[in-house]
Image (cartoon, rainbow, N blue to C red; front, side):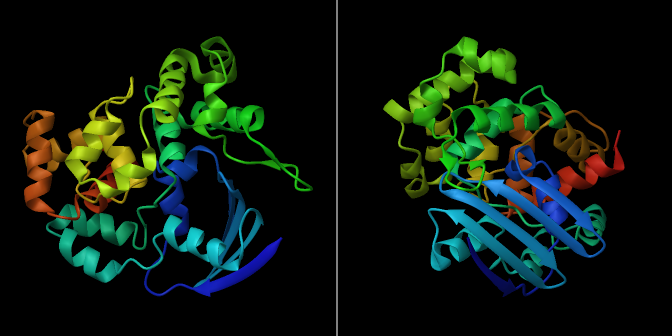
Length: 288
């Protein structure tokens, strides 16, 4: 096991970065005590453990990592290099956003593995956090490759999930989503190189990912944002639709395309960050 640490510059709220509906919430193990927050999560390469103590982020790794690649994983996953004051200047357009930024100062938009993100958000549809976490962990324990001497398993690849039947996936808690998971694994193995989407622009990448059965507009935008760093992505679920209509349209109902247009005009280039703060603030307030 390797160990290292780094000093965080600028605000960093690791707890809300994880708990605010981002991919790590679906499979990481985490706990907090006082000013310390610790988590452990499986990747396709190994297991990462991170503990934030004040401004120091201590991390360790097992599996196919070295000091350089482990640091890169941590910096990428939590977007450590993001200039948060600059981001806040761009998205702080009104009182509601000021309130959200104040409440969750330092919350980052995480950047995750494309297959991990795709699998997690397909499982998230019409589901609750407890069931999602149980399903993802069951898939890891069933199909992931073990790391020698650790008792831990890697996040399963599309190829490994492809070997499962729909019936098996259903038994592991996927429910009606099993057929979509199976199609996603098949499609991402045989028809779609997920890595190639990094090189595409937002619209083309989103169109490509929506060829997977069960990936609609909202899930596609989640994948674009949390896997591919496409900040133009603006996932719209029930909570985001409600907060936009309530705060910005005096309760008037709007079509999804109208809300996408509104976001692109109000927070150009930072729609993804704006969405995360709107979403989490609305959920926490239980905005009706």
